[in-house]
Image (cartoon, rainbow, N blue to C red):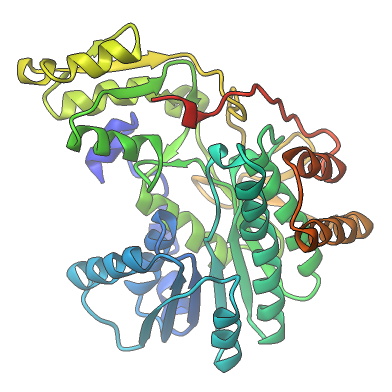
Length: 396
């Protein structure tokens, strides 16, 4: 934990006061409750699962599409925490599938359902097919599992949104903003809460996780030098989700209180710290070719080739924000957790139109990215999407 904190420019765990203050209450509620964690083998899902497991729940079932990540989750839990008295099981299922629906029909009785599944990459908006899968995963699977939870008498449904849902500029952020609207509609029949996140440091598929891969494969480190981001550790991401799930009132969205002065850091700055931690000095290269060539010789001299450039790809936000000026905040309830207080505000006609239109595209097996972007603008009229024609997959 301290190593990751150092790399992201912090020396203290963010939520430690709030977790300690509520420690007994958390343990009391978790140990007497049953849980389903959807998407539990991703980086945030694993962190949430561990936070629940170590408080000895009566039942903890974990579902994820990734069989390999699920195996690692179980190995990690057994190696760190051992066993619990309650029922702990994992299921390698796609939540959009018939098999998952059958699994829910067979039992489905959980006090708390936590949905951590998501397509989270901005790069996933480059083609219309992955973009449609993002809509299914982030919006319609959330709506489906919410309705199943209502039917099964679940006490509380929690799902992850994103900081990028506040004034979204990319399709991923917009899909989560639309997801929030569907959640609000269901909130009239079940208690719901959410969390908007900072970046989870070294989470699967993230740029920082990519640093580890580049070092292992003896490849250059590449990072933007003009984008600043907030980061939380994997453990902090689990704590944020659990706090929102257990203590969030209906429609609350929890977010980390992060200071622009203290906590914003560029990816390039993290890369330099990361390399220093490994005993290397960052060597700045002028282009990709030089970086690929120098990686053959520089590491033996204690230097690592780096390419730090400005960002020009579609969907990158200049700055991060967890709430908008129109949202009502409670900044007093917790030391380092902010809470957005929501009414059940949504447009029924728009939600129905969105569902109908997307369903028709799927039935025809034909749609374009422009078709989907148009629907997103209908749902979010002030959507700040800008298409540059450039995507991260076109870079090293």
